[in-house]
Length: 289
Length: 237
Image (cartoon, rainbow over all chains, first blue to last red):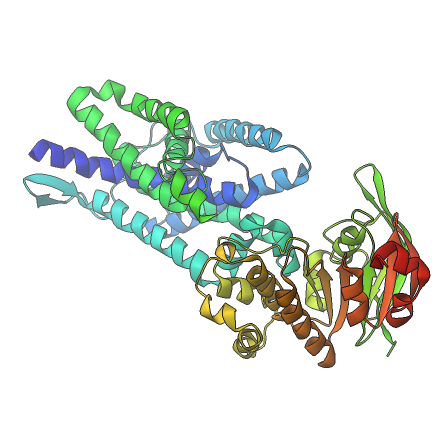
């Protein structure tokens, strides 16, 4: 029982990171219809930039802010590349994001290096004792910050004028133009927000799992899987999907073997795509339309 | 100040490979209701889409309030005062009725938005009742009311209406068109596209008849109601 609780805790912790990556997919997919396969590299860029900014002697807070800014710039560069080839089919644009991901990995090898890097926990190495298991401060921080981001994103899309314009543009582009919404700006903002969310995920995760130039491959695929589980395009689905995936992985790693951990995401991905292509909330969404 | 609010000269548009509009010239004066009638597929919607910059022109010029807006993007044209109720209503189906209406005022920076929202609710009371429902769940007539109300929320100088009556019960059409005439009386200029030629000619001051992408006939609406060509082709008498 204590074991189970410990697995659940670590599963939820990682699950929140998958949620953040999945939300990044959702934000871009909803606004542009593109699946951005550089999402994982945004996560990598967030973590790696922070590590190297810290190596350079910058204080923690400054390093965070700069890393987030750098990653959002990368998001905007990707948007610019996509807008240059705006007339291409979605498939070519998706391939463009794959190419961009490979480019970012290469760039990270050149600018940084190929080593594994980590950084100290931002809140100290302490831990709480809950039901005879431990919850590290860093894990708790991940849960709190990720939940806060989910809530803030929800409020942003629901309550602010810009957020509403973003929802409107994803719902009906022509009608959004008729409201006077500048679609290009809105799209760019979507890419920037998506990159910001991903980079925060990367920063939060680094003290726990460490990072290197290719950490984004697996994280991107896991986040994609999270978004698919909940139904691509459904933000609440991405939250649920991330948590479900994190917990499943942790249970398999604990009770079966940690070697199979990474396989979980792909088995689940295939199962969802075969049996519920709309995600576990698929029906709910189609009713609403 | 020039009398015309919209002046289109020699406008041509392609729709894919097909020529949708050819050498269209027309003028709309301040405070008028002008209608554009014609059969299905002659380019009426393309013309409205081009005025709002949703479609690109091939050649020609569009002047709004004396300014050449041909190269302006849609958002700039909205800010200058052109609103459109598009074909098929173009609602944001996953947003609530009130959220749709508020988006109509997206470009406004003044503090009268809530008053205008009240005005729309006053004109279409059913929308107030359903303000928190998803726009996509309302009936066709109510959806059209949202689309009209949303266009009003931008306080347009020129209101473009595409096939308002399509698929609606006569009583609903009457309710919506009553609001349209009120708007004109308050000074809004209206350019409406209709397949229902009788309805369009009864409400408008002047009209253009579009045939195969060209303006075939133009003149005062009341004259057209008795014009033999119009009668035979569009009024079914």
